[in-house]
Amino acid sequence: MWNAEYDVVVVGTGFAGLAAAIEARERGRSVVVLEKMRNPGGNSIISGGLVAAAGSDAQRLAGIEDSPDRMLADMLAAGQHLNDPTLTRMVAEHSAEVFGWLRDHLHVEFRDGVNQLGGHAVPRTCATAKPAGIAIIRPMLERCRELEIEVRLRSQLRSLVQDAGGRVVGVEVQDEYHFPEAESGETIRIRANGGVVLASGGFARDAGFRRIQDPRLDAYIDSTNHPGATSEGLVAALVCGATPVHLSWIQLGPWASEDEKGWGVGSLFSILAGFPYGIMVDAASGRRFVNELSDRKLRVDAMLQQDRHPVAIVDSGGVSRASTLEQCLKRGVVREYQTLEELARDNGIPTAALRETVSRYNASLEQGVDVEFGKPLLPDLAPLSNPPFYAIRLVPKVHHCMGGIQIDTEARVLHLVTRAPIAGLYAAGEVTGGIHGASRLGSCAIPDCLVFGRLAGMSAASGR
Image (tube, rainbow, N blue to C red):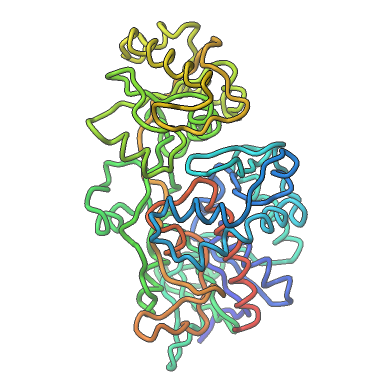
């Protein structure tokens, strides 16, 4: 018995889920989107809204030469070549296309210019005008309303329903809000005539599940993710025979503040200003210890060595890039100082050592090369010498799960034993695995979600 019936059922209201819903609906299919939380957007809504786009018109306008092959090389290097190269190439090759889709089809507003993030060979990251994922989610939800796509909140997936032949034909959810006649704890069955798109995200907030994969990541380690970033969607797919990939590769972000919970407002400060336009030092020694624009894994590994206490420092010139500066100062996440000596005293940094570090770094800028750590020097990078100075205390937090279930180039979920697609089941976004290998490059998650989210919606709409 089915309580409701649609052509396509999408699980999750983040970037991947909404992209799938829009594509399926624009192809004339009836669509419902299920979200277990009280508000839509999932983890996507609190992301930084950063989109890597190789060969985009934004790069051409800035005179930056780039290509999908170059972006692919950067993604493979960060992933230690554990990536599925075919899937990773698809993200790189379609990154400029989905950036254009956001801007021109959904009317997402972006800031002028492009940014260089750690691990990228050139500046290729575009930032939304409002510095958060909500700047993308809101237009996506508006498009869903225009298309009359039903979005059901407080509808938590319990299981995927398969027929006798193994085809996924629907879902069981706990949904007392839309079906008030259901008794407490009773599950509701929703049929999917074309297919189910699983876009339920990662499991960074699921301390029990993530600790099974990596025993070091217990509940005492904070995460940048929202409370709903748990594993039930992934587990439901595994029960159906989906192939698990790289579940133990769990990324910690190097840019989060120890003075606030979760993602907060400090992360974008570090990403857009602290790392590209400043330096990171160990408070105990006052010295740099890593290339601030290396990939996330390299930076986190360096931060965790020898019980370091990292502090990122930028001056008044570089801080102009920090879109969240006002919020950071108001919340005490970033502090402002008139002199380096004052900054050193307040953060327990040896003053003489910090002065020497800054002097050596500034001398490198004059030479046009970071002789100490090989940090890429941006064309508009200036010496760290113009007060006031700004400091943020950093701590690694669980951020992204590279592992998930395996999909093919049409976003079909592959069976562990037969290696064939599981009929009726598609997936996109962080619930999938293999695309980012050992470590995801910053600003590559949104193109990943959009490329495969759109593909999943197209595949489910056509039934292929």
